[in-house]
Amino acid sequence: MPPRQGITRALAFLRKRSRTGFRRSSNSIVTALQMTVCAVGAYAFAEEVLGHNGPLFAATSSMISLGFSRDPRIRRVLEVAIGCTLGISVGDLLLTFFGNGIWQAAVVLFISILLARFLDSGTIFTTQLGLQSLLVVLLPAPEGGPFTRSVDAVVGGLFALVVTMLLPRDPRGEPKTNVRGLLEELSGVLRESATALRQSDSTLAWHALVRARNCQSQLDGLTGSVRAAQEVARISPAYRRHRDELGSLRSSVGSIDLAIRNSRVFARRLTSAINHAALTDDAIESLGQALADTADAVDVLSRSLSARDSAERRLNQRQARDELAAVATDLHPETLGIQRLEGEGLVLLLRPLVVDLLEATGLSHEDAADYLPRL
Image 1 (cartoon, rainbow, N blue to C red):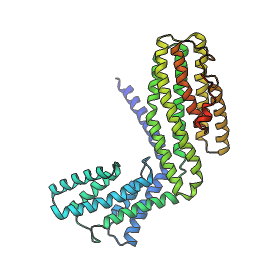
Image 2: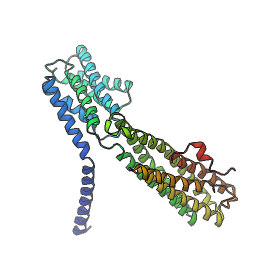
Image 3: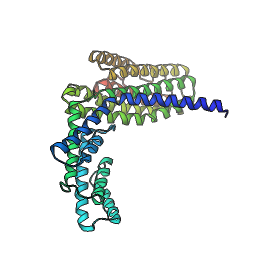
Image 4: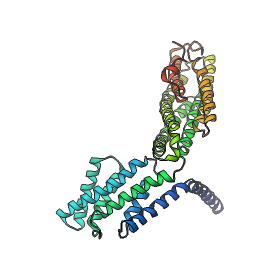
C-alpha cells in the first residue's frame, strides 16, 4: 500500500472514531453529571457526617450503582450494597479461621465467588462480594471497625437512588430511540423480502432472514432500556406521569418481539418458495404488495412509539392500525391469487406477523385477529 493511501485511511479512521467518541460523550453528559455528584456527595457524607476516614467505598459503590449499564438501577444498587456487605462479612468470618496471607486470600476469594453464584446470578453481585472479601483479607481493618466499609457501600447505594430521583434524565429517551431503530430493521426485513419475492431471488430472501436474526441484540437492548426506564419513572417524582406510557411501550415491545420471530420464519419459508417457483406472477405481485404495505405500516408504527408528543403518538398509532388492518383483511390465499400449497403456507405465516403488529398498536389479540378473513 502506498504511504499516501495509508495516511489517508488512517486520517479517515481517526475522523470516524472522533465523531463517534464525540457523539458518545455528548449523549453521556447527564449521566456523567449524575455520577460525579453522586460519588463526591457520598464520599463527603461518609467522611463529614459519619466520620469515616477515606470512605472510598462510598464513592465507588455509588458510581457502580449508577454506571452506564441498561440493567435496572434498583437491582444494581441492591447488588452493590448487599454484595459489599456480604463480602466483608464473609471475609471477616474466614479471616478468623485462616488468618492473613496470599494463600488465605486465594481461598477466601474462591469461596466467596462460589457463594455469590449460589445466592444470585448477577455479575455485579458476584464481583462485589468477591472483591470485598478479598480486600478484607488483604487490607488492614479501618478505624471504625470491619463493617465501616459496608456502611460506606450502603451510603453510596442510597446516594445513587437519591440522585436518580432528584437529577433524572427523561427515561423515555433511550427506549424510544431503540424502538425506532428496531422497527427500522423490521421494516427493512419486510422490504427486502418483498424485493426478493418480486425478483425471484432466494439469496436476497436469505439475506432478509439473516437481517431478522441480527435484530435479537437490538431487541435485548430495547427490553433492558424499557425496564430501566420504568424503574426511573417509578421512583422519580418528575417522571412518574410517564409510567402508563412506558407500560404501553413495554407491551408493544412484547408484540414486536413476536413479529420479529415470525419474520424469521417467513423469510426462511420464502427462500424455499422462491427456489421451488411456488407462486404465479399475480400471486407474487399481490403478496409482494402486502409485504411492502406492511413495511410502510411498520414505519408509521415506529413514528408512533418513538414520539414524545401524545397527540402525534395517537395520530400515528391510528394510522398504523388502519394500514395494518387493511393488509390483514386481504390475507387470504384466494384474495391474493395463491393456489399452490407452498404459497398458502406463506400467507399463513404472514397472518400472525400482522396480528402481532396490530397488537403493538394497542389492540387486544382478539380484536387484532378479527381483521383476518376466515380460512
